[in-house]
Length: 150
Image (cartoon, rainbow, N blue to C red):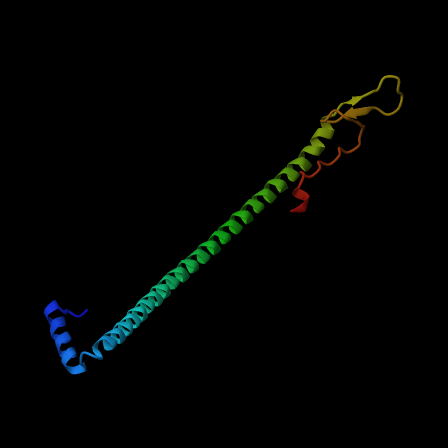
């Protein structure tokens, strides 16, 4: 900050000795040392405060960036979840439509089978090999587990 050499310090000391006098010079030097120390501490505190404020500003910027990134991630996950949900609904609708279309075809292809020792109406075997009364409509395909909640 100041460029003070040894020769300049000697000149200042001689002038101070002449002006202040030898009796008061040690006390004055001690007081100047204390004041200089306070000045240095004050300058150090100001530097530390400025440094903390700069770090806080950087942390605020980082926090805002992280919040915006988290918001974007949340939106992308919600979009992906909605697209998966709509895809699952489409598949469920296609499966239900295919099940409804296949049910009459299975009932039509079942051949009447007479049970031994029975004179009642003939029975037919359905696609899952369970006996059903001839002419009865095949049971409807149950919905897939978990899809009834969608």
